Structures are given as structure tokens and as C-alpha cells.
Length: 94
Image 1: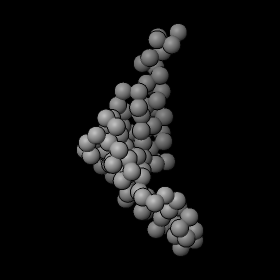
Image 2: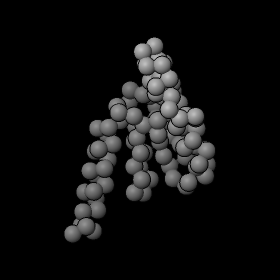
Image 3: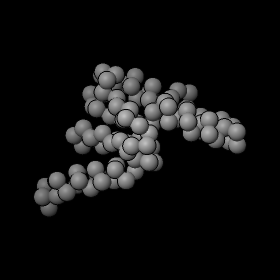
Image 4: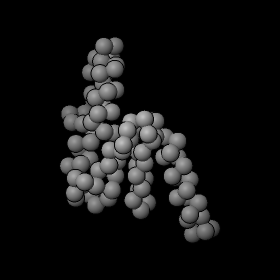
């Protein structure tokens, strides 16, 4: 509710749908609304949602213990952020 966050954006979700629709039909439209719309609707302020600069530039948002990314191309940056978070708290876990 009150976190900075990213998630699958409308543009990325549409891209995946249109690229695959000729073969898969509506297979990838499994929800009644776009992920970005649902996430944004549940945030305290709409500007807490971050889309990133480009789908080709990995984008990860960290707010406290919440780490979010948008899609598979962000996976490496997402993993690096998780590792950095673990490293920064490893003394607390011992």
C-alpha cells in the first residue's frame, strides 16, 4: 500500500500479448486487468509505481525489505539486489 514498487508494466504486458497472440490466442491474457493497473490501484499514491526508463534497461525498485522487478530481462539486476540486501543484513542473521 505505501511502498515504492515496480511490476509488469502495461506496455510490456501488451508487447508479450501481441507478439504471441497469433500463435497462442488470448493465452497470456489470464487476468481481467493489466498488472500495472491492479498494483497502482492498490498503492497509496499512483506515483509510487515506477515503470523504468526502457524495457531494455533492467529496472529494480527496492523499498525497505520489498524488492520488485518487472519482467525476465530484469532478473539479473533483481538477483543482484537480493544478494546485496542479504549481504547488508548478514550480521543480523548470525
